[in-house]
Image (cartoon, rainbow, N blue to C red):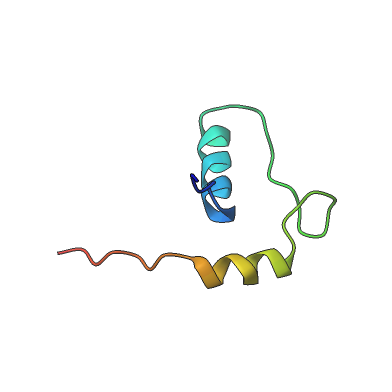
Amino acid sequence: MAKRPGLYANIHAKRRRIKAGSGEKMRKPGTKGAPTKKAFVKSAKTAKKPKKRA
């Protein structure tokens, strides 16, 4: 079973689309459809640690 991209992957992908000129906007905290604080806490538990650069 393939894993789906997580919350942070979706946020970064949207930021790239916005930077490229898609016309989208990030949702404000608390608006309908925006990630909740609970979603960020849950995703932080499964987040990968950044790789050390040499």
